[in-house]
Length: 492
Image (cartoon, rainbow, N blue to C red; front, side, top):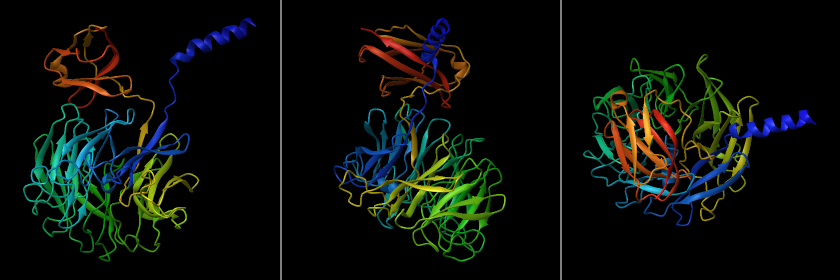
């Protein structure tokens, strides 16, 4: 009995220090909702349940489903773009907090100055964002700007400032319908346009954030080797240091499309597959999975319902791992995402399934097992659960509220005082070490309530407007690296 009591005491004493197991949800976009302008939905991977968590209403954007790309920021908020809506009806950039379900419009696009997310003349659709290591969000609009060929912009999540960095034109590429990808070694960003360049068939371009200079790296020409019109969602950065992408046209047969690699160190583009399925992909992306294979989907070609495929870089071969049948989904869209906890790939289709509204599916890369997880409704008015026809990769988000991330802090002396605090909160830090940085406060639900740049070795922040209670803070340097994260109590 004594041993049992000792064992029970040890377990109950140890339990508070055991880290809770992470629980993840998938987030995506669909048509429908309260105003029939689109929704954000959530799929719980643990309980296998589906629900909608936000409806677009025009003011906060319209047709986010057409853009489709949600980005999980370092502040644990989701960011995205809409094709239309907002003050000027040219789309918005928005933020969605998955803990509070609150959305905020960050940018209203106006076509003339900062671009438009929809190209009314060509009905081209495509405007995507990504977050760089610096913490800045970079994005493109498909049209608008000084030459009406799209703009390249940035957004600072700490200051709320957005900046137009350059406007596209026919010489440097026009109509970017792809998110940019960062070379994490150099910090240089790379992307593609579908038109413009020497042959007006699209280019690969770069942007150097340190010099604020953009350059054309490669001109697509469609003749045999290179392909044309790269319309995939983004480059796939792989562990071999190369980026991988697909073109819609070109290759051996003009209408087939290609799969290619791009070396950011040398600027060399290499076509790997010259005849892609007898029908090029459109707005698709690749993913490097844990087994070192690249995975993607296509909707054209030999199978009218589309297929999920893998690409082996060592043998330069493509393997169809699943042909959609219609009853288990049809017209797969975007790409797939992998859950590192179980190794499964997740994706969606635009059509097919029980209701012919598309499906959300998983694929086991070890057992080659395909499973339908959710059938979307075929009527967009039923809770907004009609699968979008251009929705790309799903986003995996923790629902445990770990907005103060477990990142190894940068080694520097920092002090936040007093604690408890009443009217002012002081941050003492060696600015010679970190150069620049910011401190952000969050309430217990993870909502950001205050964020200020560090102005010197000691920065004082007024907290008079904040209610008394427990808060969390996070101090980041200009590169987005965590300096310190802890909790603070405010009393009045």
